[in-house]
Length: 207
Image (cartoon, rainbow, N blue to C red; front, side, top):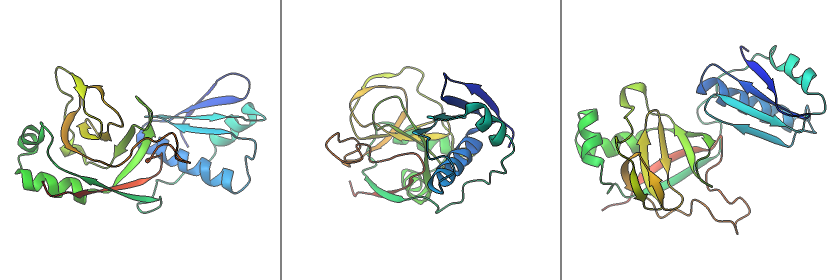
C-alpha cells in the first residue's frame, strides 16, 4: 500500500496513509495479522484520522519495509461488532443541520438512523469516538463559535464525522441529539462503549 512510515522511538512506528479510509483499512489489517500470530509482540495499534501507530515492534525497520508491500483491502461493511445507540433527536442545531441538508427534521432523523456508521478512531476526550459514514454531500461545518459547554451524551456532527460527547466539555460540533448510553465507564472491562472498528447504528428515542 502507499504509505509513509516514521520511526517513533525504538519499538514503534507511525504509518501515514493518504486518507481516513486507508487508515481504517490498515488498522483492520493489522488487527487481523496480529490475531493470526504474525506480530505477537505488538502491544498497541492506534488509528487516527490518516495514521496508525504501531507499538511494541521487535524490529521496526523490518516492519516498515513489509507494510509498504501489503495489499490492504478496504474495510467491508458489516465486518465489525455492531452497537445500537438510542438517541433523542432534541439537539439545538437540528433545524440548522436540516436546513443545510435541505430536508425536514423527520428526514434528518431518517438519514442519521439509516446511516451505517463506523468508529474510525478515538480521541479528544476518553470515550469520544469519531464516526465515519456520512456521504460527502452531508458533511457540515463546525460552528463558527464553539460552545463553552456541551452536555454529556450529545450527538454532534462536524465535517465527515459524527461523535458522542462522553462527558460535558466545550465543543464546536453541530448538536442534533442526545443519548443516555454509558459512553465511558472506568469500572467496565472496556471503559469505552465505542472503540475503533465498531459499527454503530443510531435508533430514535421518541421525544
